[in-house]
Image (tube, rainbow, N blue to C red; front, side):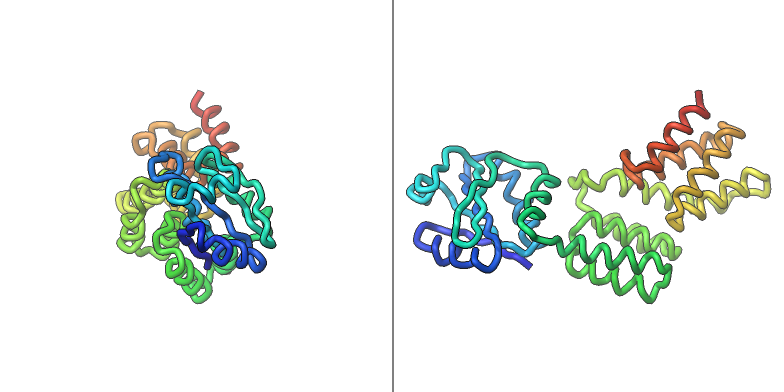
Length: 272
């Protein structure tokens, strides 16, 4: 894992230039009065842990000569140091996806992405003996990561442990908008499972039961196909329940997922 350090002029060579021969160092020239600096700081600190690089933070008001030496005119100003050479990086706040592209361009790999791949391989086996150790690794290394908490909730939801799934959802930071829709989607699945208790033996009840089961098992294509079948047959079924269930799955998948795009279009055609 990487590290985040505060550096002054006297420490710059030892803390920044020398370590850069072993791994890239990002130098964040910032000011305490700078609003954008406060937005960028937590993103860089989080990424430093994930991508295993050193983030060196330099307060320009405390180190004016250092800022002048590197021609820092506005903050935040992030420089990239490799092999003892300070290079241009970027000025201002970049979105997280662009920050990740920058780090990948430096040859850095995300430990989170690697661990997620291991988890996805385990998940594909549908074997709890494979899934739970991989999930435990993710939760141990990234206990506050909303994406991981969503995955934990989905795993326990699939296992039928609604209470534990809800507990993981409750751990998600409410301000984390990156997983807000997915969180709502998982809660929607919890509600769908609970709704199965009052189903009857009508043909559409059977289709709805199969669709919910597929969604709980993360077979979203099958689930969407069955829910759409119900919408086409009877829009009023369970107070528009099939259409609402499709919206729940869309939230889980994300707006740009191919399944969302395909079935949202088909849903609109069925409705209008």
